[in-house]
Image (cartoon, rainbow, N blue to C red; front, side, top):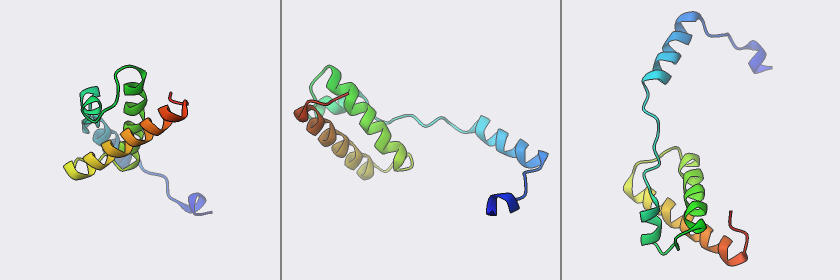
Length: 91
């Protein structure tokens, strides 16, 4: 019901939104496989698994850039990946 009552954006608002999206920097995952191997993830498929998990956590957290929050996400992704590998269902 609320959506039906919502007003559609006008052309100027669309132009502003398009401009914002055009000019906004694309978020880049601030981690690499090196960060994961430093935390004990073995090379190979485990790195890809952990990077996918890490990217999902980072996106869900709203693309944070705070070093402490990034370290927490990295630790969470590594722990999840290691549990998955131990259970035999990585990837």
